[in-house]
Length: 459
Image (cartoon, rainbow, N blue to C red; front, side):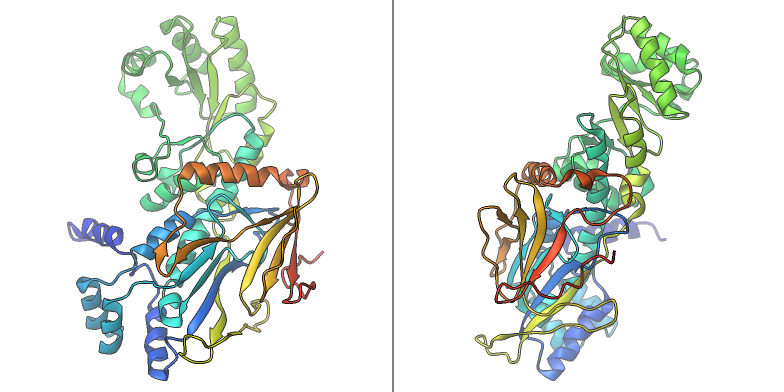
């Protein structure tokens, strides 16, 4: 790659999101302009047909980033020049793109909310042309961010009150690392090692030292002295470079028993944690914490709940969705007008493809709760909004009105929402064995009657 190309590309990505799309989005617009259908009022929905195999719930993450992407979806002169120069669009489409700005409405599940099969996570209404070209960027955001958040939620549920630290930056690409940290924080992680996530999204950051720092020095003691001098006695010392017991003893000695924490990054973590806790207590360092890392996932965190562990650092499995690196979300046209007339009624449209069908008509969604506030069902209305009773909670929020972003919120709100939504789940949702969705999806027709549900799991 010629020098400087990477930085130029990065600059373009940060200033506009319009090229984070697939070629065929623009060829569809061009063909629709030719047929006179490009500006018919249309409704698209982003939804999952199912959860990843064996998962009992999913977590929505990426809504805030999607709003930013919609706002920055513009075609500047350089972008138009590229598209026209490569014969991707003709002059008419290029002219339209040069003034593109999404002017429609968007409703969606906010960051931190849970989702289930069929949940209409985002509903986009506008002309066909202006809505269809958002497909790829929205799917790329939600499919990855929600996969990470769903894995993170399972991990923090197993960790309980013990903090989880996101440290997967070196196990994914540089920008996925930043967005993974955001998604993990929404789902309960306490902090991240990624500084850009701290700068861009305000996620708390943390970090101390790696094995290379110990190996740099003539002795482990010299390395520990340098770290303590720089970071104070409350730092976390990595103690498995050589001999764990000797390192723990030396760390306690150098801090006069006030060492903040030790980190174990290899071996049998359960056995080591028990041995290290016993050693720390014998040395009088009863307040020194034990942090464990080393390719942890939700199953290992669950297995370590009985161990004297105070926190977990998670990397690879988190940023790869712990076995489910994508959510399988799709973006489908569900309603469209039969003319360009602004008052033309919307007609439901649907795919009939085997195993890939869709349900026509605009959707609404609410979570049905029992008298104790425990979730019982994901209720999806087709063609009309069902009326909630006192135990139902409306899920779709108005996020964009006439092209104006109205749904932004602090990350702290999304994080609190996730904890509250997760607390509504029945206890079976937190079994680590494979199972069916924690609650059923119920489809209601325009009259409020239960109708065919293609998202019901096969039992």
